[in-house]
Image (cartoon, rainbow, N blue to C red; front, side):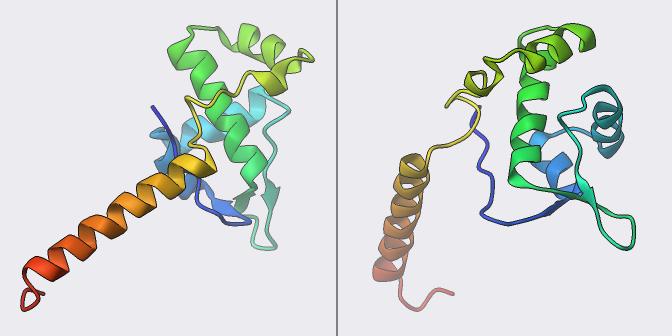
Length: 120
């Protein structure tokens, strides 16, 4: 399952929860269990996740849900020095894949417009 992370500086907790397909309380719980997941807070005390935080949350979800790690096991795995290599291309779409998908979408739209120009 590939997750396309939008090109933004900050994400609200609801956006991250939607991207990961988890509830917001799950993300808040993970923040208490994983020190590597620490979103910044706005002046209004709203959580703002950076891209790095979203990638970390994706990795945590993968470790817990797909690989079957316990919280303690996932925490230990994240703290190991090879944790940067844990996030594989199967979790985040590469820029090339995103461009390929975008091109396919544009071609599909162009095809629709040229076959039925009156349809809106």
